[in-house]
Image (cartoon, rainbow, N blue to C red; front, side, top):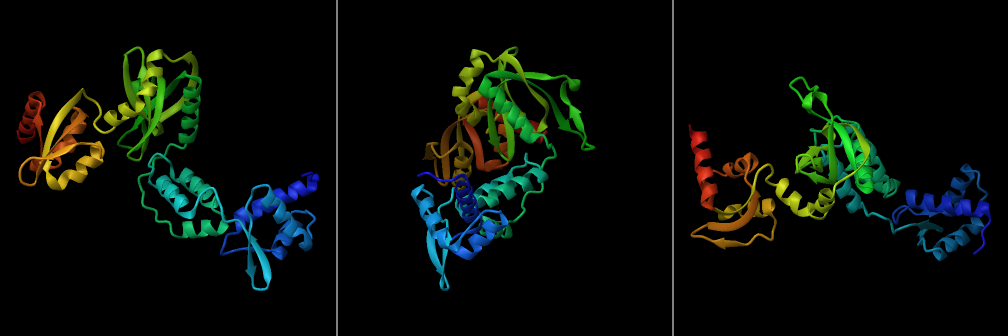
Length: 326
């Protein structure tokens, strides 16, 4: 199908117009299409709009017809994302603490417009701003870009790492000295974005919040084989490290009130095998990293949950309870 350059441009503009401004409830008439083309300084005749639509359909871009009064209208129904899909993505952006207020607004606008102007109006009109804990590091996109680049190239990264002090100022760790690590994966967990990294020097892994990183740069040094191997195990690692991180891995048996079944599934996944253990009591065998994070999670349930095996963990449980009572 040989098309003149101006006709190719007109077809591109027609696709853009239909995807952005039309849907089944808002078909565009030939008059509206020609008016738009005229504003773009593109020749357009109402008599050939239907032919242009036929060409788009031949090219695989489905354009449907619908009568608007006594006039024929055209619209695109099939989009990359449906309105519910875009709503879910937008809610995820709102919930993500690591994306700043400014970046959230920009990203939400882009996502909403993927569904076309009318869909965008509906989505943004029904938005509820429910996250007031947004972080302030505007370099988050740059950090993610640099880290992704390093992982693709299998290179190390260097960066500064900071906390926020009582005055809401940056307090740099290591007295402002750089961290040099081998990036393994980027992980989203509980509203934050983390870099899982390996240190060959310490032969250990660590997690760094991406919004607490600064001056991220790729170093022209290859990562080790150990770091590469960890990439294949990252799903299992994140399951352990982010749910109960910071301590030795243990297989334990939990006994808990039956009304906490959902809580245990939420924490350890729905593949956990459970068995009844008396009236309204259940036991489950799970893998955790024994750490302050684990004990904090466990103790929030009081007498409704306890570790019953192995003895070494049961003993630590008693010691921590005595410490809290002391």
